[in-house]
Length: 376
Ligand SMILES: Cc1ncc(COP(=O)(O)O)c(C=O)c1O
Image (cartoon, rainbow, N blue to C red):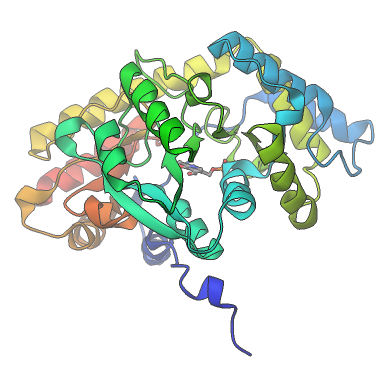
C-alpha cells in the first residue's frame, strides 16, 4: 500500500541519525541533545504523585484543566502585561503539538510559510505535512542571527500565510532587539499574515528579557512548553495561545488526535507555574557557568562563537577547518567521541556551523572540548 503523499517528503531527523551512530560507540560525550540534564524539581514531581494518589487518573477537559489555563493567563498578565482569556489557551503535548496544530488548523495546501534558516526542523516538516511551501530566510552571523524585519518583507508574496519565529533561538542562541519585535509585528499586520512565535526558551536567558509578540500583534500564535523551563521534557506538556477563532480549530484537531493531556502532568505544571521560580533561576545560573566556559574555550580553540544571550546552545563557526558541518560532526564523533549537531540539520544556511548544547555537566563539557582541541 502506498504511504500518504503528505508524509513522503517528511525528512527523518539528522540529529537522530547521529545519536544512533553514537549509541553504538563507547565513552561518547553528547553535546548534541536539546534537553536539560537536570531532573524535574522535586516539588513538581510531588504534585503529580499527589494527583495520582487521590485518583486523578481520568480523562481531563480537552483544552486542559481550568486552573492550569488560568495560571497560564496570569503568567502572561504578570510577565508581559497581556490579557489572555482562558478560552484562548490550549494545553498541548509539548510545543511540538502546539506547532503541529497551528499548521493543521490554519495553513492550507499551496500556502507559503516563512521559516528562518537555520531553524528547529519541525517547522518545515509540519509545513510539508500540510502541503504548504516553506520559504526560508537566512539568519546571518553578522546580525547575531536576529531575524531582520526588512528581510522578512522581501520574502512576502500573495501566498504568504504565516511567519515563524523562535527567540531565544534554537539552534543559534540568538535573541531579538526590542525594535525587531515591533518591526516584525508591523510587517505581519500590514500583510495580514499569522505570526507563530515559538517561545519555548523564553526563560533560559542571560541578562536579557524577551518581549512577547502578542503584545504587538493580535494574530500571533504563541507556542510554549514546560519542557525546557522546568526540565520536564518527558512529561509532554506545553500550550498554544491564539485568538478564540484560531484556537478553536486547533482544539478540534487536538480533540481527535490527543483528546486531552494526562491529569498528573497538568497538576505538576500548575505547581510549576505557581512556585516562586527559584528552581528556574538555579538551573539558569548553572547554564550560565557552562555557557561562559564553553564559549570561551571554543573561541580559544579557534572556533569563532558568539556568546548566546538565551537557550543552552551555542553555534560555533567551523569554516576555518575547511570541512562541511556534516563532515566536522562525523570527524569529531569518530576522533573525539563527542556528539555535536551539524548546522545543516537546521537548514542549508546552517552549513559552516555546528550546534553545541551545554545542557550537560561541566566536567563532561570540559573533557569533550579538550578532546576537540586536541584534534583541531
Ligand atoms: C524550538 C523548539 N520548539 C519546540 C520544541 C519541542 O519541545 P516540546 O514538545 O518538548 O515542548 C523544541 C524541542 O527541542 C524546540 O527546541
